[in-house]
Amino acid sequence: MHSYEVWVAGAEEPGIRWVYWPRVGQLLREPFRVLGLKARLERGEDLPYDDRLLAGRVALSAPEQGLRALAAARAAQPAWAGVRLADRLELLHGVRRDVVERHDELSALLVAEGHPVRLAAWELASLACAFHPDSVAEYAAQLGQPERISAGRRIRMVRKADGVVCLSPPRNAPTSNSFYGVVALAAGNALVVNAPPTAPLGVSFVYREIVAPLLEKLGAPAGTLSVLSTHGRAVMRQWLDSPDCDDIVFFGGSKQGLKLERECVVAGKKPVLELSGNDGVLVWADAEADLAAQALCERYYGSGQICMTPKFAIVHPEVADRLLKELIERVGDIRPGPPEDPDTVLSPVVKRAEFTEFLDEVLAAGGELLCGGEFVDVDDVPAAAGPFIRPAVVRVNGLATAARLRALREETFFPLLCVVVPEAPLGIEEAIGFLNANRYGLRNSLWTQDEGIAERFCAEVNNGGMLKVNDSHIGCLPVLPSNGGTGATGGIFGEANQPAVRTTHLQSIAVATLVRPRESVFDHAAGVM
Image (cartoon, rainbow, N blue to C red; front, top):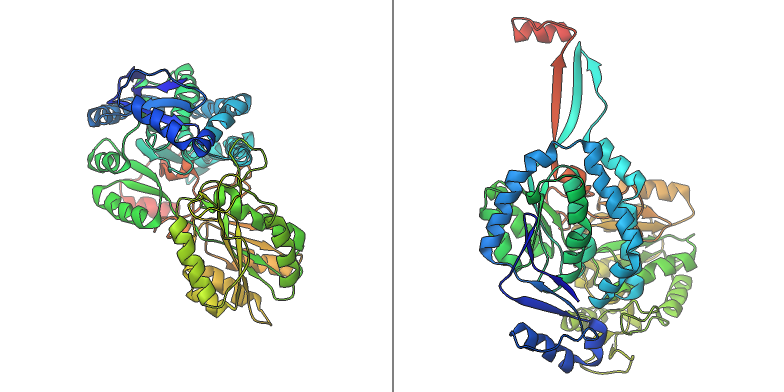
């Protein structure tokens, strides 16, 4: 059994009580038995642990433990930041080795948390990119530029760690997103992580089984890392109020995150936000319809309950019929199933009522449901209370109609893809204007064989933290950040989020060695000129 107590400053401590995590595959099959055992164990009943039904347990932390974790982080951070950058970056190389070597173990934990096998494979591949040697080299370049000589002085531009970073991963994908904190550590920060009680197991595994031992080998002070598990609102309030917290990394909805951004600024904290997404895909007239359709099917990973899946497509009228035919054939092969099934990509849908509401609005505005939309059980049998929804594709005619629909204006966290077919003729400036008007800004992608169209897309689409051309929409690459965005996705400080940059600050240094300072600063400035 995976069992993790509260981790404060390098030591295990008992928590308030245990939270047991069910195996989601068994939960779908035997909900009453699984939830019954979970509830009885959490009440403290002396029952045998059933590994077939439960994946492990994590101790809930007390507020007092959170305060001590912050104080320990503040005390430890200067010594950790004093470790050579090259040595701190070894943490990233070590994490990558462990992710590769323990792939099956990590995958099993993700599946136990309800991530389908194929989704887990994508998450782990993304992590391998984040800690690829090329990515680590990029982090090194960001944190310290080569020294140079200017005006008779040694000039350095370096990034210094902000201090204590507090990380709150999202409930829908906590494990993979929690790795954001590893780069913050390598940048010289101390870290306090809150494993969400609604899905605490994977985060606890990563930081206790992988990160903590690596930090110990590198000689990091004990307080460099603490791992809590408590309710999000309570820990966020504690972080905002504490003088021992410098940065708050928050994953969640835009409404909550943008409110937190304002509170952070008032409290003197740096907000690093990973919020909602409403990604668009532009399919131009000359696009390879089969490849574009394949990329659009990424919409249904995790039933669309991932911020960076494509939410809508603008399809040139000249390729619309071919694209839709190809897309519907592919979507028809996507079926629900338990997360252990290697062919499954769908997950149980949380916002089922909202799916119906948004779909009804699209249809009332003249949209055409081309496939999907039925509620089904794990065996794909129609059921009004079924936890799954068959992937839905809706055609919407005209950009003006699309601009009025919430399914195009807001993040849709369910398996609904709106394909917008504008009226002919369609100009590239019109399509780009639609993408730039999106109040969210995570990713946008394009499918075209026209280099001129591709260059205009790359030059003129200013919305989003990432643009991709003729490639997987959700695929990650070494060097490039996988997170971060503009607008309601990243807030007023939003951009492509490189953790090494976002949790540090730029400092300039001048060391006079070849000149003697003049008595007057005005004389000195004139001499430099």
